Image (tube, rainbow, N blue to C red; front, top):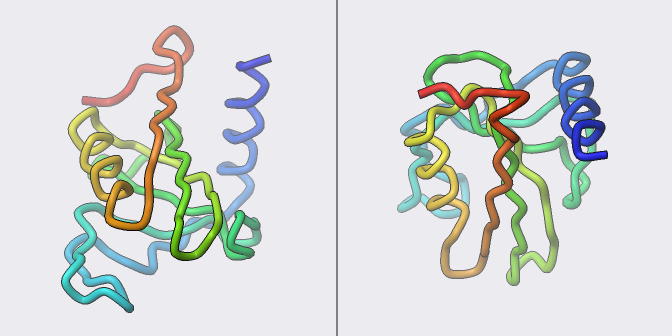
Length: 121
């Protein structure tokens, strides 16, 4: 059953155009003190909990290999979302997780099983 979850996400990624609308180092549009530590964007043509595209964190490798997901709950927006980690090293995964935990939001990391998928380091 768990393999189906990851395979469905792999299909969604393969069939979607990735849009990086917040490149590494750019500031959040509403919170200028918060800069993005990795490339951040979404899968075009998909829908997440906020009604927009499914969010993605893209690692420096630039590959579309899904290594983990981050589940977030935002008390300010009153929503929950999934964020896909693509081509992220272990260090980049921890950076994305730390960025997803802030004053109003909490996040939980769900790594992909290493048996089926190795996280790039």
